[in-house]
Each structure stands twice: as structure tokens, then as C-alpha cells.
Image (cartoon, rainbow, N blue to C red; front, side, top):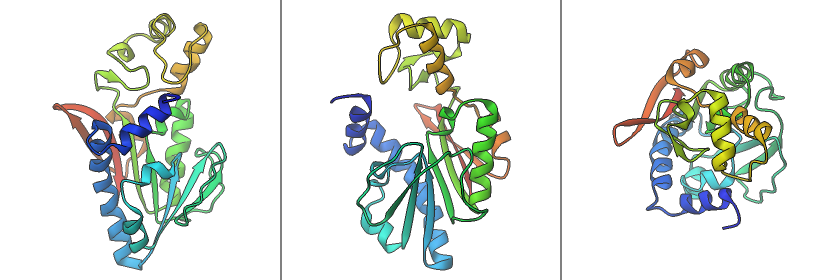
Length: 225
């Protein structure tokens, strides 16, 4: 595979992989939201913040078509998508150019930890909550002992200055080499894990569900039905 993104996509396409099994488990929560909305109004307009077509493959095109689903993928960069179920938009998930209640469901998988500062996270959560009556937001759990972006155990619980030095020394970066301490610090600013307390503060009207692996709290899902 050419890069980490390609390797991860290959794991998601393998139905026996751990990646795929977790995605399928999360999809059950999303299907419940989609089915309920479709039962009420016969269609489902979904906004996926930071999403991709690959992610939705687990649902199946037939399932989405039968629910009359239309999925808008919002990203900072342009995408070329030729699948009829999808629209693409370029924009900022912390300041979406759309009126309140423009969608039936807002979806986000492993994005909020990348948006930046605490204020950026609050802005992201505000947009999620205002753009649809239902939402599903998933993020890796700060209190899981393995950090998925550094691909290393326990390092994310250390002071940030020490984390940066470890990232630089051991090249704990999923995408490209870390050239200096400033780059390591920028990497850490771009990957800021949240715990349940912070997610509860950002999404006070949601039910929090903890996804577990071997009994440990792997990720957090905030769901408003």
C-alpha cells in the first residue's frame, strides 16, 4: 500500500479485520437512526462531516437506496464522487454554510478529535446539533490505552512536551515523517483525543455509548435520536 490511508481502507474492506468489525458494530447504531427517520418521512437526508464514500460501503448501496437516502460529504478538500447517492461539498465543519435543520441526520466518524482547539470543538459540536434533529458522532476514547494516530500504547497520557519528543524520536506518525519538534507539536495539536466528560459537555442532549474492546473503553459515540 502506498500510505497509511490506503492500508486502513484495505482493512475496512476486509470483513474479517478488527477495523471492519468495529465499523459494522457502529453501523448498527446509524441504521437505527436511518430506519426511524425513513419510517417517519420516507427519505433521509444525511450530512457526513469529514466523510467518504468508502465509509458508507458497510451499509450497502441497496440498503441506502431502499431508505431513499441522500448523503452529503463535507470536507475541506474537493472529492470526485460518481455514486448517485452522494453529493460532495467543500467547507469547514466548524462553520457549515447551511440553515438550521437542513438535514435529517448529521454523521461524523473520528473527526472531532482533528478539528483543533477546544473552541473549534465547541464550534463543531454546535454545527452538529443545529443542522439536524438527529446525529451520530464517534471519536476515539482518551482513556483507551492505545493511541490510534501514534499507533502506540500509553504515550498520549504523558505531558504534551514529552509526547512531542517521543513522536519525533520514534516517528510515531501515521502519514509522513516528522522532521522536527515543531512538526511533532503540530501533529499532536491535530490529534486531540476526548474523554466521556468532554463529549458530554459538547453534546449535552445526546446519549453517550461506550464502544469496548477486551472490556476497555475504545471509543465514544454521542447519539441524539
